[in-house]
View 1 (tube, one colour):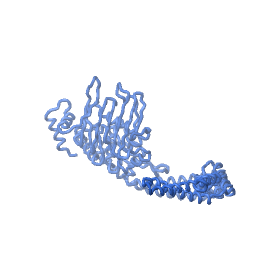
View 2 (view 1 turned 180 degrees about the vertical axis):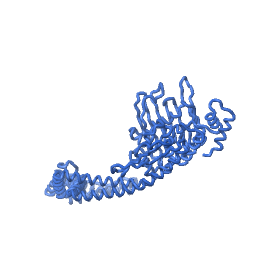
View 3 (view 1 turned 30 degrees about the vertical axis):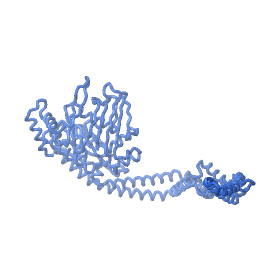
View 4 (view 1 turned 45 degrees about the vertical axis):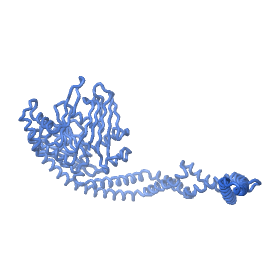
Length: 553
């Protein structure tokens, strides 16, 4: 859900820091006070397009930051981790900066991102419903997902998509086999020859490491023997070896130690050095005895290294990558072998098509039941939203087989009696569209994963009892989701869990928008203003207090 919204120099907002609560909240105020500006700023943070006109007059840039809570095991958290954009603390911070030239930059959790990435994340975070805002429900894929989610058909839809992909894969293989038989035969022959060459090479990574180490020893055997011999001479095998000199020192100091015990420490140190030097002498002798000059073995190893390197250069790879290259070739050869028989591929394709048809048929059956139920529920809700006689229908339109099944899902509506059903996309009235969207969201709220729902002017063209019902629906929706609503109706505002007043003030000869959280008496006063207009009487205030105290939401 939305936790915080920070706005700098946006339209008529100079600086706002807003902390949002859960439940149902309303934004109220006089017309033109800037209520929708807050939603416009949030839309920018969610990835909507921007132009230079959003920058406050006289400023260099507009800066909007929105902070959201995340479900740690949700789809968005997984997507952020995949994109390496997660913060590690179940929080997502979206930032958008638009300069006075119309250029914009976007960040997620402090990392620069593309507008497409920001928009993709925004689709998981909030749906903004309004007369002039992007409406997620107008998108065909969202309508399909809503129906499948509402009908418990998500797994069946995934099964259909998987069957479709397998069918298309086999169809592509069959078509390629029929089209490129000769080319595939040549490729199979080449791959078989290459794999045989690697098989004869019998390359083993462990052996490769061993022969390189052995080659290093044999190639420098003469230098090693010379150096070890010199060390042995200096330690003990020469006329004045270190070992004998140290032993002589130890014997001499031992005799003198009886005269002056102060020599004990020096004698002990030299004695230890003599022991270490003698041990080194024995180690070097054993090493010398094992080390041999073996020109034949060296030549054999160099030949083996040369053979491997010839193959490596030929295929432009590295010795370490030869096993992976062989596996890649083998996989490709297996694929080509399978494509060598178009008739067998055609039979496999036919089986895959049958599996798709069966899965798609099961999905269609579930969709038909879900469409009928959802259509009836939303039609019933529309009757209480100033659309008496209106009708909503989830139409399943037959289409060519696709990854989504055998039909397109289209939301259709007739807002008034006698009107024909038309696609929701073509509904002309913004107010009707908002209220229909409200009805859809209420009916599907238990299925939706979008945590924040925002309604801008859903009360256009309604009042009285209908307005109260809208407030009740929004309050009900706020039990499961965070709901924000810009409204002019006191009946809607009175149903809210919390309320903010947006007003304009003149400061330093500039018109600025101000947001004030309302509580107790201040909220009564704002509801009274919405009820009574310019002249607010005590009677109006009592009515407002009664609405807040006795609301049936």
